[in-house]
Image (cartoon, rainbow, N blue to C red; front, side, top):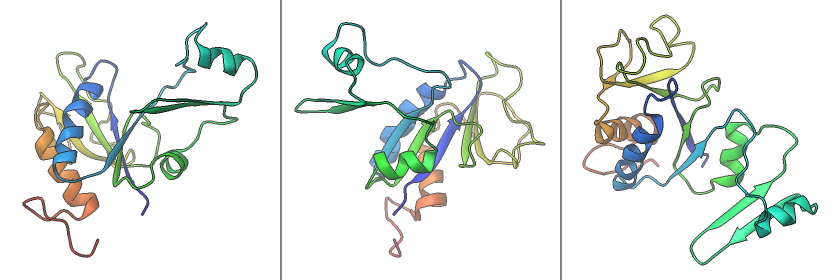
Length: 179
């Protein structure tokens, strides 16, 4: 089963990470196995100069894995930015859903987070919501949108909405028996 990818998008400082932090435990409470991807449009450095993993990468290793009793991290050189489906297939086996922060240009369904005290208008307007595959708005202001609207603290409701719409969750934490 390919995991369902849901992109959480919004303008800078709109609260995307904060909302994902609230949404993840609500999805887990419903029994959803969920992963997360943070998109960085620029190159990033997870390793720091002088650390062993940095030294091994600088010495020529194309892939470096750091392993401990409770986590694994991998740093791998790539020749292109991988698509969300490529990342889902190779990095998230067994997950029902992947939440991403960013990937506004992808074809995946999107939830936009908009805070009126930070930005006057949302990233997506009513005219381009369908083009951008916006499925819901999370906002503290009335937004002219033809999609369901949720408050910034409505993570439980958004989790239920996503589980019903994309995973067949019926009610009371029950999954559709066709799954």
